[in-house]
Amino acid sequence: MKKSVIFLLNGLGIERPGSYSISIDECMPHLSTLKQTAYFTTAITNSLEPKGAYQQFFLGDPYQMELEYIRTGILGESLSTNQTFISFQDKVNIPTTKTHIFVEPRNEKVVEQINGFVNKLNLEKDERIYMHLLLPQLDLSEYPKLISIINYIKFHLNQHITVGFIMGKNYIGDTSEKEKFQYLKKMLFYCSCERWAETEKKIKMLEEANIIPCNVEGFTTTNDCTITNRDTILFFNTRRENYDNLISAIMENAKEVFKEEAELNVFSLIQLYTNYNIPYFSNNINYENSLANVLARVNKKVLLICDEQNIQQVNFYANGLNPVNNPNIIFMKQDNNMFNKQIVQGLIDNSPYDVIIFDYHMDTSKTINHLKEQLQRLDIIIGYLDEICINKHSLFITSLYGLKKTMPLADYNTEVVTLNYQMQIPIFFIDYTYPHSKYMLLPGETNEILSTAIKCVADDKSLYSLIQTKGILNNILKAIKK
Image (cartoon, rainbow, N blue to C red; front, top):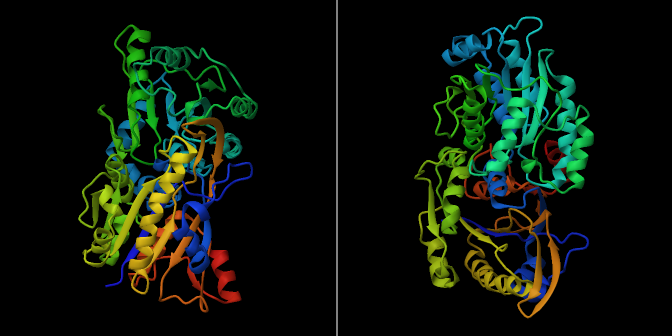
């Protein structure tokens, strides 16, 4: 039975200008040989860490699907009969109180859903809603895009909505961080923080200071958006997030600030992962393009071989942001047996799995020399896979994110250099059923690598493949699609 094998050498990427150069030809002779015989193309990834990389690989960009679900599944006709919405609307209508919406601005299109939601509230003419932005972006390179998103949101908001606080989603990592806990009290309840009506200037300053967006301390665009007693708070979340550190900072500080019995009404759009009892409008989103849903549709099974500490995270994303146990997705703890050719061959040729994914990470190395040694060891597995898969199975050798890391050359040489493989990653592909004379491998995104691998063993027209027949017209059409 034909299988698809994906060997993920996470951290491997195309060297960026100024990066320290490692000779793949010297460190990885098997991979070097494949450069001459296999299909080769590249993919773009913005991730520099496993979490975002796994999400992109197993889900693609789920944000558009989430926004569409909010528009049709939550804000549709059923909203008027949603008991949580009715309760929320009653709280919003309490005189002399404010309504606060916390939202992660991953895309400017979220403003359309927020406007649609606020329109459903039938507010009085001068009634205000304060929208607070939680910046989730994990990389400094996101700032230009973030400026564009915030500017778009500010100029397209419903007349009832005003942008209030802007802060990093992960600013407070733990409620034991007393200094940050106190800062949030001053900011959220007294508006004691920097005020920047021209947010673009402030954001550029944050970028120049090398402060990652998700860690931004927090500032405000207006002075009247403080949280007061009996206010209503809505987390306009598009997925099942955990905001407990922020919620704790709000609720615990409220007890001290208000003196009297604190009463804050907290809701969420999608059910949160939380220790608090927070009413929600919808339980979860069904990500139709997740690995779990695709496997169920095509009746296939996947074996995922990865580090034990990554299994929970991989499982969460592979199952569409859901930590369930799925009989179609089986995990195996990675160990030294993976350097045994007979064991690897048994997993591929004799196991009941249709897709086998080896998940390795090269960002654990402490020196350049250690990294080279790690690449040499992993190249042994690549050699095994090439021999095992030739004329039998599909083989993909690729990565989910590009490494960017500063480290010494060796234990005995403390000269520090920087590797920069971010943005662009390689894709090697071998499959005897796709002769070079008739087919080509298009560049794409990492989730399209997974889709391609499944399509190699499943006849499903809904799956997109990077493997396309040659032809000018066909390639133009594919390029337009992408």
